[in-house]
Amino acid sequence: MLQKIIAFQLLLVLLTGLTFFAEAQKKEEGKPAIYETAWNSLSFRSIGPAFTSGRIADFAVNPDNPS
Image 1: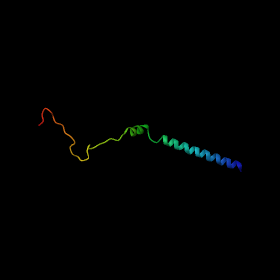
Image 2: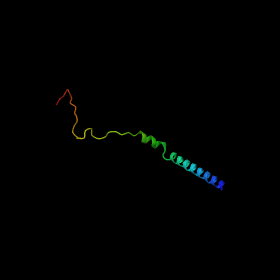
Image 3: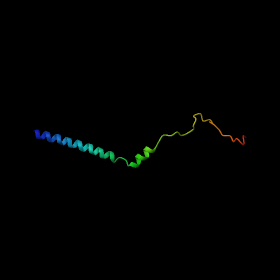
């Protein structure tokens, strides 16, 4: 009887170890490294008008020709 209990516990330990090993392999095979590089190179940036009102913020005048 004791041998059956020990064998069952050993079987459970082996199956648990194989499950963790399979999960580790699955994570490594997920996506190629190029996707990680592309995703990590993205950054947030502001796009669109500088002011929310949509009006002209500034303008340039030629000092030699004010007209």
